[in-house]
Amino acid sequence: MAAPLELSCWGGGWGLPSVHSESLVVMAYAKFSGAPLKVNVIDNTWRGSRGDVPILTTEDNIVSQPAKILNFLRKQKYNADYELSAKQGADTLAYIALLEEKLLPAVLHTFWVESDNYFTVTKPWFASQIPFPLSLILPGRMSRGALNRILLTRGQPPLYHLREVEAQIYRDAKECLNLLSNRLGTSQFFFGNTPSTLDAYVFGFLAPLYKVRFPKIQLQEHLKQLSNLCRFCDDILSSYFRISLGDG
Image (cartoon, rainbow, N blue to C red):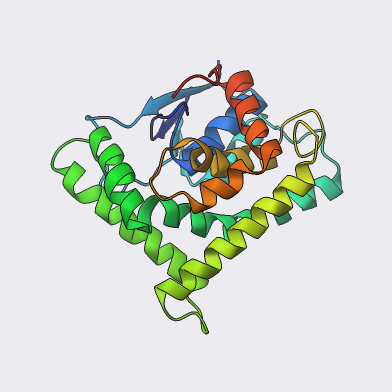
């Protein structure tokens, strides 16, 4: 009997199985590949101090970070990409790199740096999931980590100031969403009728942006104009997570 696969991750809200992009990437990939994950949602018993999830635990291994977790699952024969050609495999890597460079900074900013969103939505939600006194500490630590990640990738000359960085990352993110929409077209998934790694990443990055109700929604508004990307998220939620469009 195979060793149990346990995934520690942030939980759900707003009709999502998780509100956390990196947790969603792994959860979606597991659904697509048939990996039998036991999902352990972070709650008041959580003792981690950094919020570094998702974490996959087996009898012999502890694996963190989505790319490493997906590679581990592939080695266990849970492969959502076995029907892809070599070119499609290369395209997958290129699009994931694009997502992480062009879209992720704006997603992080929307959740963790934009003050209205952070103080009215993100901070209260994450604080409500974890025990006191960690609930007073961890959201701020995660916010600073998100800002550092944005500035590390985007705060290079000539964009020295956060406001200049903000304008650029939202321009880049909107361009990235347009590119994804054009690439998906009328297809169900990015490489035809079967979901793969790329679909897991796009879903993980887009679904929280699409569903979470924020007061500041400039990127969300742009996404909602791209009906095929919204349909893509809704179809995965209903088909793989059994979440109806009325939930949340």
